Length: 326
Image (tube, rainbow, N blue to C red; front, side, top):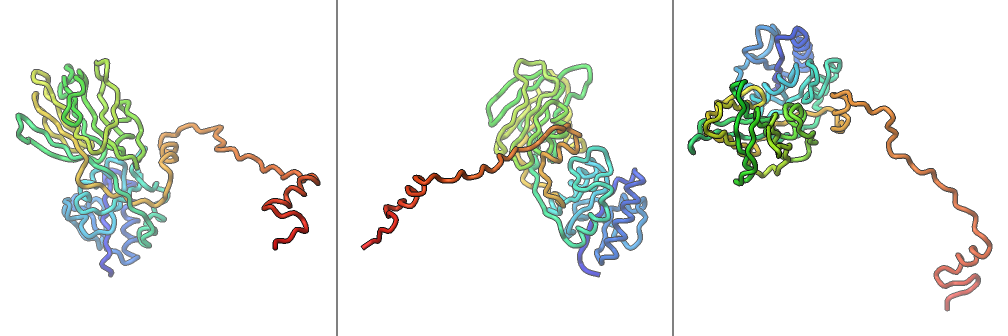
C-alpha cells in the first residue's frame, strides 16, 4: 500500500453519514490509499483496516486531504484539526445549506474518484485571530474561520459596548452583540444579522452589530489589516465570545475583545471552479427567471462601395491607379 493517506471526518449522528463513510473507506482502500478516522468516530463508523487517530491536529498531519461528511458544522469542526497542519478540507454536504461544502451527497462516488486521481484545486480562506484582555492582561485567545461574535450572556439585558477600529473609537452600541466576520462567514451569522455578502476573494473584515439601539449601527467592511476591538463597558452585563459557534470564552464587564486577520488560513479543496454567484443562487434558491445575459448585437453586412468610393480607396497611401514609384 502506498504512503498516501486521507482523513475521513463524519457526522456520526446521521446514519447517512455513516453509510457514506463506509463507501469512502471502501473506495479509497481499493485504490491503495490509507484511511484515517478519528478515535471518537471509529466505533460508529465501524470500518475495518483503517488507522484510528486521536482527535487532535496530529490526525491531519501528512494527510493529502480531509474528506468531511456532514454539514458546515462538521466542516468547521474538522477545520480545528487541519488549520495548523495545512491539510485541505473537502466537504460533502449531507446537511441543509452546506455553503462550505464542495460536493453533494449524490456525487460522493465521483468525489472519491477525484481524490484518488488528485483532480482538485486548493484555495485559502482568510481566518481571524481573537484575543480577550482584561485590565491589559490576556485572559484568552482563539480563532475563527466564519466569525467571532460577542454576545450578551443574560437575555433580559442589553450589552453596552464601544467599537474601535485601528486604535480609534467609532461608536457606542446598546445591543445584543457584535459579529466580527470573515468573507467566508459573511453568509453565516453575519448574514442573519443583516450584514452584506462578501465574495471570498475579497479580503476584508465585517463588523455587524446585532439588534443595536443606535443612530449609527450599520454593518461595516474594514481592511484586512485593521485591528477591530469591542470593549464591554463596566456596569454592563457579562458577555460571551463565540467563535464559529464552537469555541467560547468569557468576557466580563470591562474586558476587551481584539480581532485581527489570522496568521494561518484554512485551505479548502475545490472540485469545480464554480463562480460564487452561481453558488449563491443555488444555495439560497435565488430567483433568476427572465435573465438573458448580455445581448449580442447582430453583425451588420458591409454595404457595397460606390464607383467613386472604389477610386478613392485605391488611392490610399498616395498611389493612383497605374502610377509607379520611381
